Structures are given as C-alpha cells and as structure tokens.
Amino acid sequence: MMKSQKSIAARFYQLKTGHALMGKYLMHIEKRRDMKCWWCGHEYQTRDHLFKWCKRWKREQKQLWVDRQEGEEGVTRPAGGMSADHAIIQEGNNYLPVLLITI
Image (cartoon, rainbow, N blue to C red; front, side):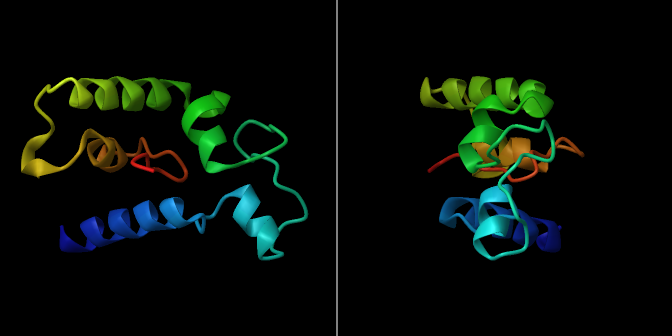
C-alpha cells in the first residue's frame, strides 16, 4: 500500500512540474522527435490535452471533472481525506497516462 501511494505521489508531482512522460516532455529531453499524442494522434500531447481533450480518455475525463466539481460544492470526498483527483488516479487500471489536476 505504501509503495502504491508513493508511485501516485510521484506521478502527481511529475505532472505538476511538467516532467511526466508525455510527448511534450519527451521531446524536450530529446527522446522523441515530436509531441504527438500516442493515444489519439493529436498534434500535441500535453497535460491539458490529456485531461481535457484526448479522445481516448473521455470517460475518465468526464468522471474526473464531475468528482472535482462535487468536491468544490462540499460533497464528501473519498475516504482517507484524499481529494477526488487522487481517488480517480488510484482507481483500478483507469489511469490517465499522466494524471493530475490541482494545478
């Protein structure tokens, strides 16, 4: 359990700082020649693209934004005091390739 929480925290901070394994960052460190999204083929794979527009992740995006809105309206958040954003990240295999929101 502790190990999985650490990996989630690592992904969170990678996303927040722009160092997550996405097209934009991989191009910056010269591991890719372009920023193309490998999930949907869009010209740019950025954090915003993955969280808001990537066609591959529409179902997860919708749930993420619903949970985020509910949290802002005072609805009880998931057990353990974690934000809804973190709960979605941990849910089964339904990971956005690079997940996070409180940015």
